[in-house]
Image 1 (cartoon, rainbow, N blue to C red):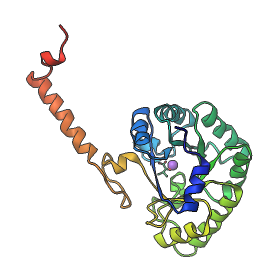
Image 2 (cartoon, protein in one colour):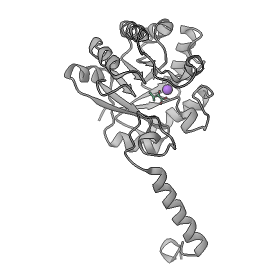
Image 3 (tube, rainbow, N blue to C red):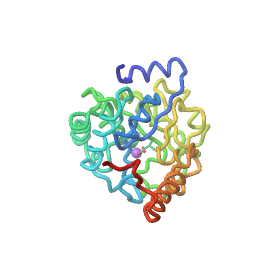
Image 4 (cartoon, protein in one colour):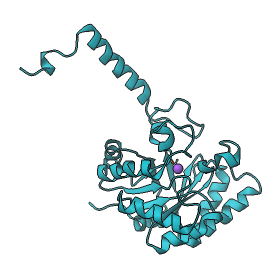
Length: 264
Ligand code: KIV
Ligand code: NA
């Protein structure tokens, strides 16, 4: 079958259908999620933290994200693959954004890109959309601005909710095909979702958004202290701990390998 496209995403909103998005950073997890029917895979700059071990998303580079994006594209056959533009790779100018986005499309085979921010990145969004690059926007707790926010805190409370709404409408007008809403009050996310004709993708934004996204290591129970908005659907850390201890015990005790796993 063919890949999910921006037209499918738009049609889902018209039909009132909700959809899931998960992050992926390598071919094997991409294949599992793709075969499970996840329509959109995000190669998030969260790779800075969950792949590279940094304590924020800021340090990761384009050159570090490109090979992960290629792997996710190779590991999937049906999902749309969205590549996150990392901190510092698009803010300077629309030209910089176009050059970076073009690398993700040409070198890694991404089908769309995501970037953070509202009205301050509208020129970037317009330039990318004019070049035929589908753009997913990202508002609310945009982690690349953690230093400006003074920590990872809920955004869009009170007056700033109106600004977020204005940002969302401007992003839609500029041609974004979807907008992520991260860590905002559920009632604000509900109002934004009702006001836009493009889908909203919530993370810590309550139940009203058109789609939901989680970092896969969070939803699978690999990350030690996930935020409140995470629901764990598996305990992979526990399962992997059990398995690797069993392997270690069998190696030290001589129970593995036996003839069954040996050549003669
Ligand atoms: O980088 C990321 O994983 C993200 C999602 C959580 C939206 O931006
Ligand atoms: Na991100």
